Length: 115
Length: 231
Image (cartoon, rainbow over all chains, first blue to last red; front, side, top):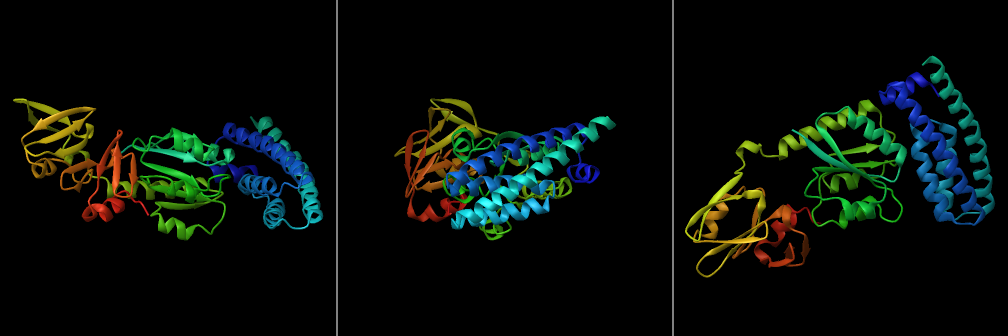
């Protein structure tokens, strides 16, 4: 994630960027938890809805690896495919999100330090 | 020109970004953000807004079902994370089709499209008849055109319903129609003219305005549906 590119993309100041990054962190944490629970309950509709919801957010930040997993998850959940495959993808998603949150938090600190 | 819009999208990060973009645009005022289409259906006064930013993929009610549920379909900017809604955008005469995520540069292009859409379709306010005088019980009374809902021809006179009050005049229905902006009013029956934006409900060959039912002649039916953008 390149902070300057993101600022240009959104044409915003640091304050707005900070608020959007914080909102992103809050959302992905919440949605990942919902997807995990829904997967355990084999509630594929909820998995699909929330994978789609998260896609929208991660696209802003151009997180291609997560986009690929979420797109796959959305299709798998809609098709109600093999639960084991979905579980593996959710696990992969969870790991990627953990890493991304770390990166975004580092980005947040970087902006705050410059301010 | 000042336009009012509402955003209907369950994605709160996206709506936050669009709200930010709109805050830098003078010509568009954001009237409300709705993360739930059902809430939007209940709360939006469609007579008050000029257009919608509408997401296509929402749980419970998707964008297309939402549009189909409306009596009067406002102009829309269709928004989606998928590229497959181009045909729908075309079918619903969408002003623009935005594929998420949306950069500020792309959004500003859309604003230009929106402005151009309304410049073409809106009649300059100066050319619209804002009020008319009618002779009611021997006195000339000024009626604000926008307050007039229904005009009904009776056997010997014509009744205008404005702001819940009825005014009788000896003008002919045809004469009154000529005094009104015909982009806003339409004759729907040999005895009725109505203001299109006041129609609450359309049920086959009957329309409803403020609880009053008005018949629609078959002659006018297809034009009415077309003007209300009912598919």
